[in-house]
Length: 607
Image (tube, rainbow, N blue to C red):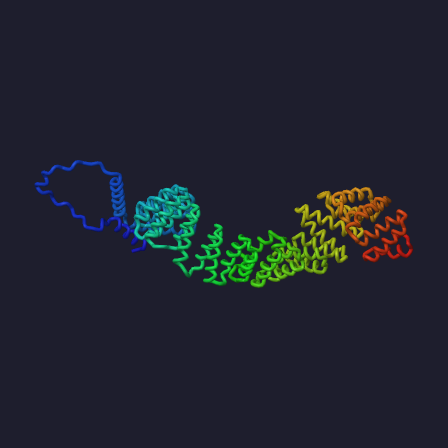
């Protein structure tokens, strides 16, 4: 006999079997009884009518099953097995086709109805899923899986009351099904029916005794009901019944801390540390509590001890350090953040993310050299993160370390050849190294990659203006500056360099004056911009105006070029002795033009 046929025979025997005791047929009435008055007919109760209907249904099922021929049973079994196979393969159309053929032969088989319901649920046909699942439960009221499927279908349709009623029926009807009280309680919790959920948990406690899961769930309910004291009682109960479980102690400490019960939080967290002296979570709870109590020294002590533990996951440490980064720079936090980052890199020396976040902290606190060192260590561990490479080359550029800038940008471009910013930094590196032809090549290539980023495109154009000027390709230089100013008419670098280079060439001086004046108006105290404006005025022979702008610039700088220009303006105004003094001062400062010695020797202006 096949497994399927054995199942059908077993199911049939369960359906045919009567009550667990022998029900005797009534004996023939005695003569005296035959004379007795017949009892008066009464109306059946609703419960009795339902019971009669149930028995009638079972009788009909029994008759249908008895009349099922062996051939039909075999065919139904074949369709059923095929249907289940397609269901496992998630081919729901074929599964439903086979299962419905099995159903057509044997519609009163609970298993077939159950599988049809499951298939319909998975394919999204909730109406048919509901009907077949109900039939499965009606046909076999002792199979808990049939109840669970129907409850799932009800829940999918937000029919929570029906699902809850079904769980209640399951628990009351099917032996050894008390565990489904947890499903019932969770369903009540999802609906916000907290009292009903608590009642279900109490039933579960009567069946299974005190369970950790029940205490946790009851805690959640009490917290959602704002019954903090009851929630804390459950936590204390968990601690007392599980004295060796530090996780319950930590959960209770966190609950106290979250609800600003700081003394209790400290007491329970210290209890956790007595059980597990190296527990980083207990240290973190204490650190938070002490911080909220404005006890900064103790808070820092606890968080450093937590970070020193390998038990605190690297990702948790990084998340905490990211929170620090958001608050930096801050004199009160800078040193602590650096120390925590240093501890993290020491405890996790093979984690690129540890060095990366350490680099971020050094960057925002202004220590670029240390930041770059950390970023480079992160790259050695994992060179796949473009953002870290970008930070490295940016710092190289800011520190004017040309060799490093070229080396690192070339290495990064091998990994990320389509990143326009890397080509920009590479071009800047060649420009700083006085190789303008190579700079143009990199900048022009990168510019093609930046067409969808107008802001970056303007930066390329501004830099190309500078480099083409160095190559004495003035038309291309001017065109590049003009393109940059189309995007941003207030681009300070473009306005300054364009106007200054025009003044050196003695070309378009009125345009240069307008640009320089605009720049100085926006930045009235910037000595570089004031010097540019002064030199444009000088080239326009407005020596008095040039002198005025240079005197403003010299309030904020002692740059040799500015001082030399001031001397030139004074000379043009006839103040030769003052001009000579300024030239001498410029030479002493270092960085003046190559003509400075001749000016001083001959007491004459050379341009």
